Amino acid sequence: MNVKSLWFVALFIAFAYGANVHAQSAVAERITGDAVNTSNQSKGVVLLAVRWDRRWNCGGFENAQLRVIAFDKLPTAKTDDAAPDIVLDEAPLVMTKPVFENYAFQVEPGEYGLSRLEIKVAKSRSDVGFFKAPRSKFFKDGQSLGGTFAVSAGEAVYLGHFYLDCHQQPTLWRYYPEGRDGFNGYLASLKKIYPTLDIEKVVFRLFQTKEFGQDYKLP
Image (tube, rainbow, N blue to C red; front, top):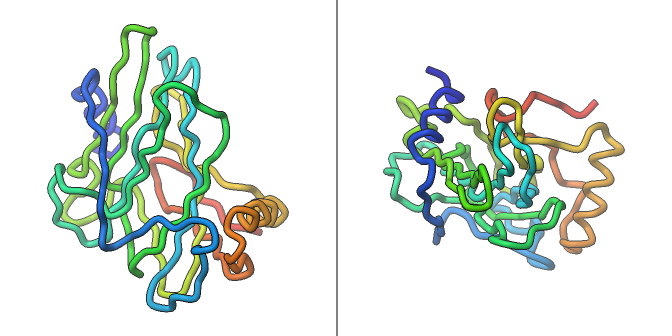
């Protein structure tokens, strides 16, 4: 059974129940503004963007909304109720904007795997539930099924833009700016948000996944 099948089972079981996830992690720390730089040679920086708005007419539902993405440093032996090492869970409950929100984390160097995913779905205004895939659905025999990324000490790595895909069912999808010009435009926008970030050092190294995105390398 591949992770898409596991994801479908997780969605079916978890529909109509959900809980927020919050993590206090010694492995990763979100950084903002002038604090984002690569001067700390013992840590790495990961950059990504997330869209939290509702996607309408999505996979048979009136709308769907990405609620939680989380990652764990590998190897991991955490149980489903343990806090993730990196967690993104800032989806608004009411007002949403159709834009990608940028995130930067300072992390311990190493490899990280997708460890939690939550999507809110609505068949109507009154029929709302949560599709959830916990940590146990994303790891088997110590191997990551959902996807991984790696960062070294002193590196700044771009992982991708994360949003929903609506083919067949609502699911996570990893997007990216295409071509050198597209990536350079993204870096220029980052410089406005993180003025101390040395964009010349940012590495295009997408979150590697066979289930939630397609392979791509800059030409």
